[in-house]
Length: 267
Image: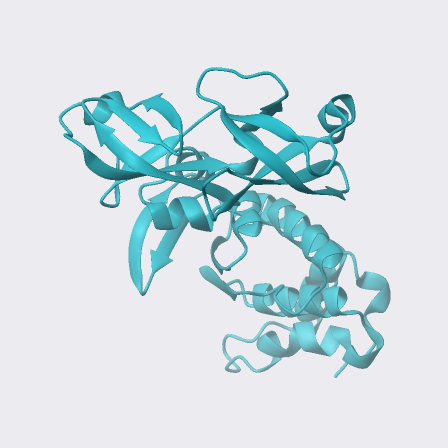
């Protein structure tokens, strides 16, 4: 079927009493095609469309019957990164215009953070946290949520009487002042790691293993002495250029923000 016929399908198969007049169907379809910016392709067939265009047509077809709830199960999963980015921003704008309640399933944390008004994080079929994107990202309820929502570095150690000793650094843990030498893990996002050639409080010494520029950011892989795990720092290109790091040199890595968990509970 053509693009027009695909979008009109749900309206054409309604029971006769509920089916709109042909002119109404045409108006509704053209209105939706204009909304998804494909009105000029109304006579085209799916084989003549790109992957992103097909996804937009599928969404318009679902919207044509004016659903109370729109269910989207990884709708952009088979598309390349650039088209995914374009479509999720387009979908966010479309949602703001139509105000249709939508449930969007995704394994892409950036997609969830950009598209959603509220996020529900599930693990093995159970809800582990829900809230606004900012609430879930800034205050993860468990190590699973923290690890799921972005690249993280782990610092193993122990916490006692409000202080956590993690991988050679000491950080305050006032919310767990009652702990007495309990095993703990500190979680630090890559973009919260600050690099310097000068020692600083709560900084750990590390060796630069690899430097990779990815568009506007530079990812620096570091090896910590006496630790099999590597850590990653994510810098702006400006910061990386001013540091002029080279592989093999020693630097000091200072986490700007550490979230500590003890037995899967945040402290």
